[in-house]
Image (cartoon, rainbow, N blue to C red; front, side):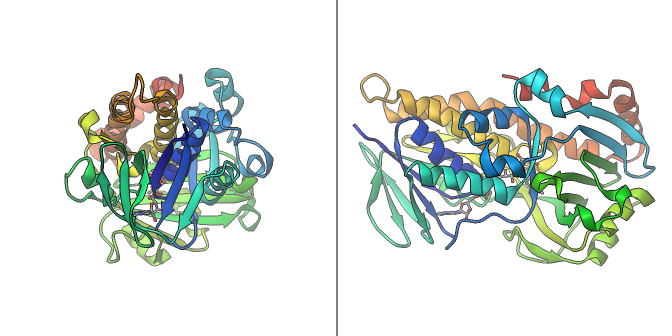
Length: 393
Ligand SMILES: Cc1cc2nc3c(=O)[nH]c(=O)nc-3n(C[C@H](O)[C@H](O)[C@H](O)COP(=O)(O)OP(=O)(O)OC[C@H]3O[C@@H](n4cnc5c(N)ncnc54)[C@H](O)[C@@H]3O)c2cc1C
């Protein structure tokens, strides 16, 4: 019997979920509210925990492979005095240690690769179609969209992002929380930068109440920069892509060394978004109910200080694939399968959410905490930066 999964949301999480369903032998039907499938222009880092899955799905090849970068190392600096705090070998070292690479990529390239894969796999795509309501029935889920009523499937995955409206179908806990942090992001063509500012590494600058991350994307031709500062900025909190000026960012920077400032000043233009998150997931009941499961930021929005939001969405999708593959309605029905998905995911995503919050405090530390952080990083270096529990199998 052919089974059909409905997916609400066509971001990285929703596309990964549709692809996972197809790999599990299900049909998939995906609804995206935007008229076109697209991603904003910024980079993402993908640890071996995520790239292992992309490789298993045969995505790390062809044109997409040419866009990927495997940076040689992660280098952490104190952004106030410029001193080096620690390094972690990435490149071949990650592949050797974890059997999968640590990659940096432009989000639009990752999104396009997933979109091409679901198109090839026969997922029915409905752009310009917002899922507005859903009803759980005895043997399925019926959704009302802006274009149609009574669309039915056997299960629904809500991958509708941090501002998920469908989340309330599983856990009714209000709106996400404002973090008090703003993420400014920029892209520069490496050829346009002076030689000393070009980079093939992931570099993180930790400074009081801010941090800056740079890494190469698009086959190394472009340098991606994200600068997170504490403070407010007028604008739409739901808009991921608001215009920002260099002056706004300069005003938000605290005591930052000249080398980090030069990197910030070398970026041609900046966009910003206001960061929101939720407290860590409290239990499996907060990730699935009946025939509806939450996935990605809809389930566990997190601060980006562990660079794992998209990675966790991809892992969610892989777990979904595992449970859908065994949901046969003879021994395992769909609600039981989704319950297993939630049981197998919630503790791990909660840990990543809570460490992401903790990293924010450590990254932006001042006074004695900053001194303790720097001493620990200088002494332990790679042992602190490597995340065996996260990157390993
Ligand atoms: C500054 C910053 C840096 C980051 N860096 C990294 C990183 O290095 N590594 C990493 O792994 N992660 C990173 N992340 C996190 C990562 O970007 C997100 O976790 C990930 O993109 C979430 O994907 P998603 O598909 O769950 O949600 P989204 O990308 O928000 O997608 C949700 C989609 O659902 C659609 N939608 C919403 N409501 C409906 C509806 N009712 N019906 C139909 N469609 C709907 C939306 O239009 C959207 O397309 C970063 C985040 C930030 C802010």
